[in-house]
Amino acid sequence: TAVVDTGSSVTAFPCSECTTCGHHTDSPFREQDSKGFKPTHCPVSKADDDGCIFGKCDSNGLCAIEHKFGNSGSDSTGASGWTAYEASDVAYAGGAHDRPIDGGAEIPAIDPIVDELNPMHAPEFSFALTFGCQTAVSGY
Image (tube, rainbow, N blue to C red; front, side):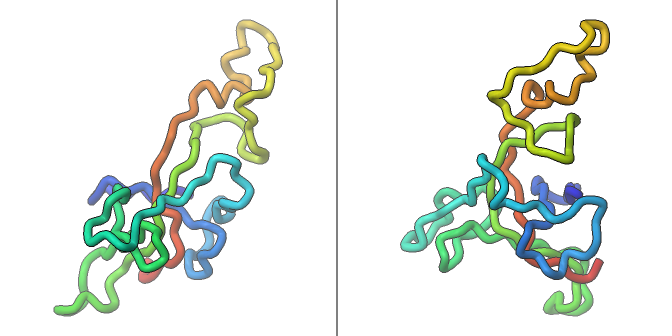
């Protein structure tokens, strides 16, 4: 289940280490099972966030993202929100979701009229996606 934040440009979804992400249609993303998954690293020695698109460089050299929604006081404690680290992978819309799609595999032909519906064509519609790999969610 992806979270598309209409108040920003960040797409995020629960990753394997998130224990507070609640229940979703799909299980959390298991980044260790993806051949293309790459966390976004940044140089911790720099004051700027060189290398981060959405986040800020943390002490582990990862781009940390923190999103808060609404507020319930002057310090925003109790507001809904989530934390994540920035990562990238290859994403695709459609196709088989119960197993990985191998972009290098031969695409079996079915019937030319319905071949465009073949889920093995998913790699043809793949794209690089930088997203937030959620590690915690609160308040919603």
